[in-house]
Length: 96
Image (tube, rainbow, N blue to C red; front, side):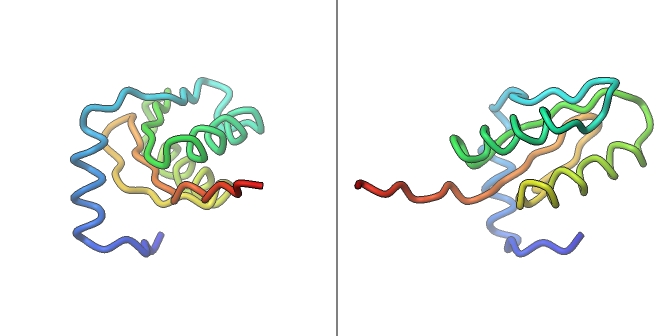
């Protein structure tokens, strides 16, 4: 999964994410439409989020991370254990 983020961006986002708590939890049912929608909502509001993935299968967690990034247009900043750090630019609001 190629990243468009620079090394400096990744380092900065990792520092910022260190204090974050997971805001999206992916349970035994895996990646559902509701999870994708909630992730999209959180990314729109905050830009940088942590996602907690249940399960012990590392390959499954990697697949979920890739699918979630593809579905939301986010970048995977970090994958440590069962936690993912995702980033997407916050869209600019129109004042109309």
